[in-house]
Length: 357
Image 1 (tube, helix red, strand yellow):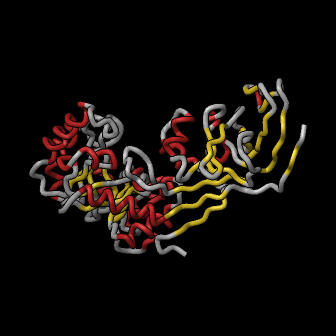
Image 2 (cartoon, rainbow, N blue to C red):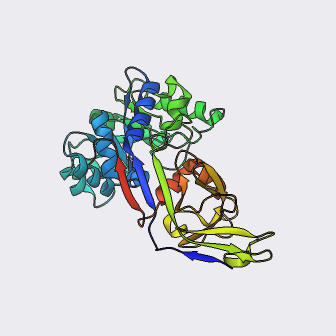
Image 3 (cartoon, rainbow, N blue to C red):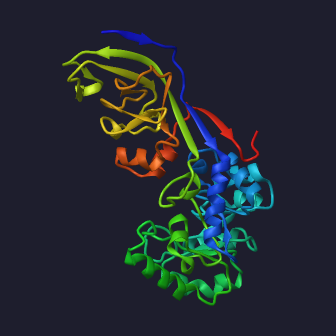
C-alpha cells in the first residue's frame, strides 16, 4: 500500500458577494415595479456571515432586513448603523424590550400576548404583525387577529405579513388557499403587506403585495433556479493512498475495493457541515471532473476515489460552479438551507466583491 501524506490544512470557503447582489437584483426585478425587495439575513446570513452579506445588500439598495431573533437584529444594526429597517420574525419576546427599543428593531408580533407586551413596555415603538394563514407554525390565528385588529391598526403597524407553507411547490393548492386567507384578513387595512419569500416571488405578482422577502435564492439556492453560485468550497487533500482489491475504506467498512484504486483523504467532515449521509453517495470535483465520495463521512475527514484523475490534486471542490448547495443536499437527503447554515467555523473564509475589503 503506497501512502502520500501532506501537511494538514483547512478548507477554503469563498463567498462571492457580487453574485449575492446579482441574485438579489434578479429577484427584485421579478418582484416588479411598486414592490420593494427586502432581504432575509437570519442564521448569520444563512451561514455566510450576516454582517458582510447585509452590508453588500444595503450597498445594492436593500433597506429592509429580516432576522429570526432580536440578537440577530443587534448584529445587523451594528453592521449597518441607523437607517435600514430590521424586522424580527420571533416578535417581542420577554426580556427583549431594551434591545428592541435601543436598536430600533421592529418585532413582528405573533400573538395577543406579544401585542400586549409590546404596547405596555414600548408604547409608541414601531411593530409589525405576523399572521398564520395555514402553516400552523408562527403568527396570530385568524380569530385572534379579528379580535385585536382594530386596536393594532390604530397603532399603525409598519408591516403585516404571513408565510407560505408550500411556495416551492407551485402546483400546491395550499398556495392559493393561504393567499385567499391573507387577503380576507388584510384587504383594506392600509398597512404595507408581505407574503412572498423566494418561492412566493416566483409564484407570480398576485403574491408580491408591497414588500417581498427573498431569502435562500439570494444565496444560490432553490427554488430560484436562475440563481448564481455564491459559495465556493475547496477542501485540501491531506493524504493519498493506493489500496488493493478486497480492502475497505472508512468506518464500518461500507465501501470495498474491487480493483486497485487511489483514495484521497480530504480535511473536512460532518463537524464542518458536510453531512454524514452523503457517504457513498456524494461527489467532489477536480477541474470539473466528478470524484465519488467513498466510505462514510467522518467528523473531520472524507475519503474520495480519484483513481480516474490524471493528476494528484492538492484540493477537491465540493461547492461551486460544478455543484450547487442543492446538489450536495440531494446527495445527503436534505435541503440546501441545511447545507448552507451548517458550514462550519473551521474553514478559512474569504469574501470577494460587494465592496467588502
